[in-house]
Length: 433
Image 1: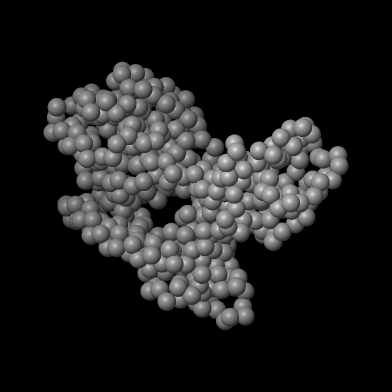
Image 2 (image 1 turned 45 degrees about the vertical axis):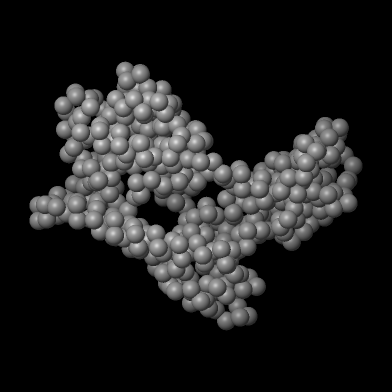
């Protein structure tokens, strides 16, 4: 076992329990990581599996999938591939939309408990920190990528593991060269339209020429910022515990007004992350306190940026995607025609022939639904499925004329309502638009 493999084995031993998968693009970095882990018995004992996410972004994509499948087979490693649906490009940008799609695949396929190893190395960390600095990131962004962090997915136990963050790419190149490993080379990595490519091709070589240990310096700075960022995270979590209403995912403004600027920014950022909404650009952050939180009491202010809107109502902050999806208070519905609800359509398929008295309203908190003879908490159902807070807030709850909860959206039906719908040959549907 080489020194590199021995280091990986030691780091592997310190991981949480669970199956081990490797994000395998077929490039140099992930090829080295997969090859080295395949030589470690403890990794194979964890059910080592190579996972390839096919973005279908190149005419060579099919060849890359075939290459990865064959490389995994040569190592005797299980292989999985998935082509995700790329959504939200207009709101998030292409790279962020791809990243979200990859993470959706990770959440879908990775067993629980499970660990997904990613091959980001020290050079990647340096590029990431410099890019974030140029984009005006704060201490959280400048702290860089974490070695180990949870992969959010409801109540599942999954982790993203980056064991190579302190290892230079030159070490990986030497490992691949000494073992004659073959790998794919994505032409997009040399496309000067990408900021990371320009940084890698021109800026970092100049920095390394002037400061040969610049990568190590950046890594040390990231470690210090990570410690400070973790302390700020603790303060932000305490702020959210005080301000957050889990029923409608809104934030009380009173504790936000008393929070230091750094804690406020981190807490609001975490809140937006949990809602599945993009954080504001640097120029907007400075207006959150003045224009939203500290605006005069009789005002109804709001801020918008690409993919999100935050507004203040009754001294609470509410967030949504910013496309006019307003949630009604409560609506009487007879089921014979579709009901427009917060940018969605609730309908029976086919429509009811005879009207039936329903009331549709958003969550108020404490609701339960009778399923399989047991009353189940709606809050726990939604938490278990990992539904973002902004989606929970606009989910319609359907009640009958006796006040019993019949349906949560169209995905969770009570026992009585399911039998009632089946007897009439109808199905409750919730669709966009």
